[in-house]
Image 1 (cartoon, rainbow, N blue to C red):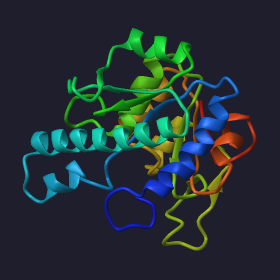
Image 2 (image 1 turned 30 degrees about the vertical axis):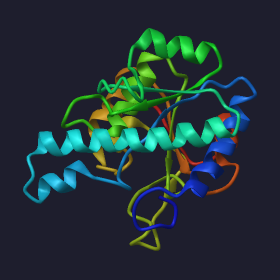
Image 3 (image 1 turned 45 degrees about the horizontal axis):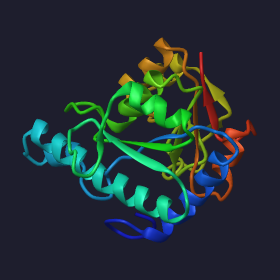
Length: 220
């Protein structure tokens, strides 16, 4: 969305894509999960009276739009990209199959996972962790608008303190808004490290992947 109030900002996608492609060219395998808050938020629609299942399915379809936009721009920049969708939309995306995703990654392609988990009542955060576990990822990196995990909302409290490292259990017990509790629990159960960092600081994606102390590391 960039600085726009709604929709897709191609220039923002190009900036982020350039960083991802640069790191991927060094042999790093990327699986990307994208939300759809720039187009439609199922949870908000549900709160306004829409059936939650229908609203969540609409949100899943909206993620496909974002995934196709990213794929299109990345391919124009020279990358090999595949979109795999948990909802079958065979005209525009391959169906998600774990072995197929693994094969694409082995061939050096960037894989974008669309449609969340394919099920209502699960967020794209949970989808990201689920896919990470399935493809045997080394780490989940959650790109956000803030520098990391704080003890309180930094947009509302000037004395908010950022954690350099925190455990899954502390995140859950303190009700920190990092990811939803299902996603955090799945990370903990599978000993999958999570790094939360600011996407909008240029070069952060590379710094995170290269092991620089960027953002907040969540692990047990």
